[in-house]
Structures are given as structure tokens and as C-alpha cells.
Image 1: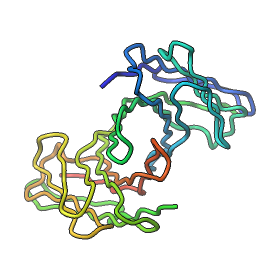
Image 2: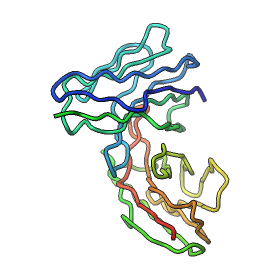
Image 3: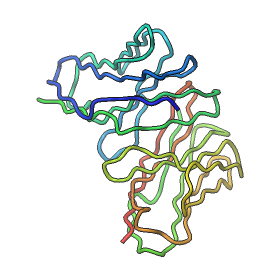
Image 4: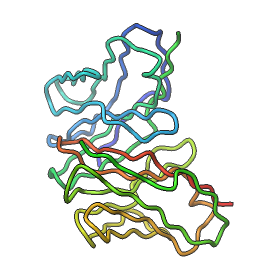
Length: 112
Length: 112
């Protein structure tokens, strides 16, 4: 499976945008990019995913580089509830038979 | 949307004792189900996944086993626990959107 590289930790001020980077230089043409987050003592929560085009949903935006070797999760206005570990995951699969490999992610701290 | 129930929430067991963790899913039928383990300070490790009743795939060799006796029930078991089995056990199911998995609240297991 292609691997991802994320910073171990990041800090951001409350109510400011947050850009969480992820490098995936060995991504294949069929790999999707997924982002999950895990709040303390909880299971991971799906955030967003994409293939080639930038994606937006109610939680965040996903910006994917043109060569797809990197992506950035954007939280437009961070709140204290966004403090979590964020995982960037690649998955190449046939829908209905997917497996996700979680790394250690980026621990995001929000400063009040 | 799917709801995943796991019990117990916490468990302390001595080395060598048996284990049975249960996961049930509501709000979907014939889901893909997954068992993950998260050791302290580590990422999630996929242990087992199932695409249907009686169909189990193991991702890593270990002293754990999984069973799926009913469509929406997934059980993780061990005959004899090891200290290294301590961790946060999470059950997940595949969502309706590509790349989306729903996670349960987890069981925190401490083997003493």
C-alpha cells in the first residue's frame, strides 16, 4: 500500500483556518485520499475524501495537488472541538471491499 | 445512518484469561465489518474484516479470532490473553459513501 507522511503535531489558534498537510508521493492512479479524525477516547470519525478534484463538505475542504503527490485538509475556522488526531489515508479498492491503513496522524492542538 | 454498539466499554483481564468483545450494528444490512486495535500512543491496526456471515479475513497473525454469527453482529475473541493484547478495540462498518467507515465507541482492554 502507498504510504502517507504527516507532521506529528500542529498548533493553531481558535477561530483561524488550519491547513493540515499530507504527502503521498507513491500514490497510484486509483488510490483515493481519505481523512479521518479521532477525538480523545473515541473512535475515528470520517471527515472527507477525494480522488483528483478539490472537495468541500460541511466539516472541511480537501485540496489535492495537481500531481496528487500531496493533499491538504483545510478547517476553515478552527474551534476547540477540532482538537484531535487527524489521519490521512490512501485506499485503492473496489467499493465494498475496502481496507484502511491508519498511520500515527497529526495531533492538532487548538489554542484558545 | 449506521449506529455501532460495542460492549463492554472497559475491561480489565488477567493474562491467560479468555476474551469476548461484541459489536452490533443498526441501520444497515449486510455491512462490511471491521475490528481494529489501537495500542497506547499508536495508530489503528486492522485485525479482521468480514464481508458477510461466517466470512472472516485476518490481517495479522495473533492469538485473537473473530466470528460473525449474524448479519449485524461481529465478535472478537481470545482463548488466552497476552499482555500485548492491551489496547483500544474498535469495531467499524462500511458506510454508504466510498471511503466512509463508521466506528463504534470502542472497548478499552487492559491485560494485567
